[in-house]
Length: 209
Image (cartoon, rainbow, N blue to C red; front, side):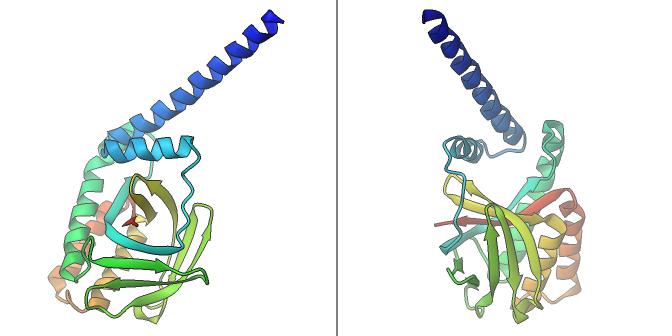
């Protein structure tokens, strides 16, 4: 009987060690890309089973978020600059269009419709489908029926929805045109420059409750 207990105890220790290693690996990957606090929260929420996000309800827009596509730690280190470029430049451009962190909201309704409201801009509407972490946003006529396919994940204070970086910047350009705030060739060129960087990352929205 004692031998059986000892064996079971050993198996539990091995399982715990393996789990701890997975957690540490997840933290190290994201630390290479920055934002340690959010990383620890995300990894722990996944371990504790709290990683699933239900989008239904109202969220405050917290700015543009980005992440390196590759899971390779070295690639994450190399892509850290790309993440910073996407987030800061895209935030700056959208702010000029009246879409700033804390000043815009997303509302996802139980019937599968959503609306995005920023400042004095008329609400942008559409439909969404969420299947686990996979999310598809289909915008209405305001953004020429643009569709974004991405994934939602929990953060320490809300969630983030990330899409293909190039497609997200295409959305950003349409949003700017809709806002009619940036219509000069210089504004378009700026987005074009970000598009080059966006090839190596996923980008999207940071949202908080």
